[in-house]
Amino acid sequence: MNLKELYQEIILEHGKNPRNLRKTEGFNKDAKGNNPLCGDNVHVYLKLNGQKIVEDASFEGSGCAISMASASIMTDLIKGKNEHEAKEIVEDFLGMIKENPELKSKYLSEDEKTKLMCLSGVKQYPMRVKCATLSWHTMVSAFEENTEEVKTEN
Amino acid sequence: MKIDQIKKEFPIFDEKIQNNDLVYLDSANSSQKPKVVVDRINEFYTKQFSNVGRSVHYLAVAATNLYENTRTSVQKYINAKDKNEIVFTKGATEALNLIANTLGQSYLQEGDEVLITELEHHSNYVPWHFLRKSKNIKINFAEINDEGEITLEEIEKKITPKTKLISITHLSNVTGAILPVKEITQLAHSKGIIVVVDGCQGAPHLKLDMQELDCDFYAISCHKMYGPTGLGVLYGKKKWLEELPPYQGGGGMINEVKKDRISYGELPNKYEAGTMATAQVIAFDQSIKFLESIGIENVMKHEANLVEYGQELLQKNNSVKLIGNPKNKGGVLSFTIEGVHPHDIATILDEDGVAIRAGHHCCQILHDKLNIPASARASVGIYNTKEDLDQLNESINNCKKIFNL
Image (tube, rainbow over all chains, first blue to last red; front, side, top):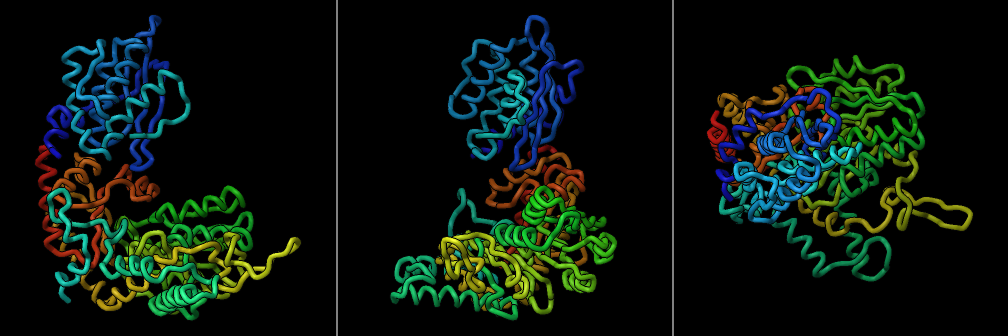
């Protein structure tokens, strides 16, 4: 176990000053997620343009440093991607958080991969994996226009 | 009283937890188990096992006697008037559900009001909510004051002519407030109102005397009392348990079963349907003996010293904010750190072997009231020492360092 790996500077920084912590004006897709075990919750908003490209992404909610940083980084890098690309990135991210040593998606730049890899420290903390994945599951739910609230899973 | 000696009776403290000595500060969640309790479970399964109350063979009779011995021990420990006022359940949650369900079937009517408090654990709210849905009863909440207490005056204020029942915690699992249960019961009874007490936190840490408290029902969680999981105790005044209908149907709770009619068994069998947690009940006798050997007055004194020490320590630690400051406080220290989420606190403390709980502790109503999504909670038991609280404080400082506070 290594706390330094879990709480890297970039995580602490995003946790403290989350990007896109607001409600997108004129959003056309959104979904809510919550972690019934701890009461943490997130609401993800997406605004897709005519070409189905994410013009803006944002979130509201509260949670630990890991969940806030994860939602912050996610909403940052999903902008400019289309639904297909976004979903592949989600798959790639969830695979990395659970078992894969690295990210493989061609839709991620090296810089984006580096940022996301900062969240890989949660692998060693099974109870905290759901903190990192809640906003991602919620974003998929938003794309699919599920009205049911997302519950966390590991 | 030598805490070091007492601590030695708990095998878990011989273990290294991720290479650390265990600093267990999560007893409000569940207590650790002394060796006598663990050994008793093993011994029963190894040498004495049989189901109880059914067969006539030697083992069955012996096991039944052991099972009933625990009932008598519990009766004496909580000073209940009658042995048959002690019902074993699968937990305090089941005990509270049993009370709500049976009172809902036969006593509470549409429009009746149940008064609970903002301090209640979900298990003393959700069962009443079921009745709000099915019977259209109303639930009122007594509100906490700034110290995180529920006063007698507040209860009095919230009683209406329609209040039929008051269900309150004995000791808050978040603020640590000890409620004036005896006074509340006197007040309630003078108005013909039933009193139910959630004793999950009260039973392990306070002196219990059912005849003095005079409440109508009291729910106990055995695993918080140095006992096994899967076991609870429902104390209920005999007149209520006799009057109310059964909760679950099955073997053991019947008198006679015919195609056209069924009659139910006597107390306490009436409420103990199916095969019970036999080994746990038998081992729980050892938990009571363990507590008796220390003496509840000594337990209370030790824990009060710890809480006072811990409170002072955390009050001095800037950026730590304690939740609630009740005059009568049990062994619970709930807190937040400005800028660090409780889950992050718990993970960082865990790295030092300090086990606490983070979250809403099944008290979302209270956390909403306090306007915080979650809190961190350190809670003490008989095995804790001032050194444990020093370590807690030190690990909190490490937490602040990681978060650059």
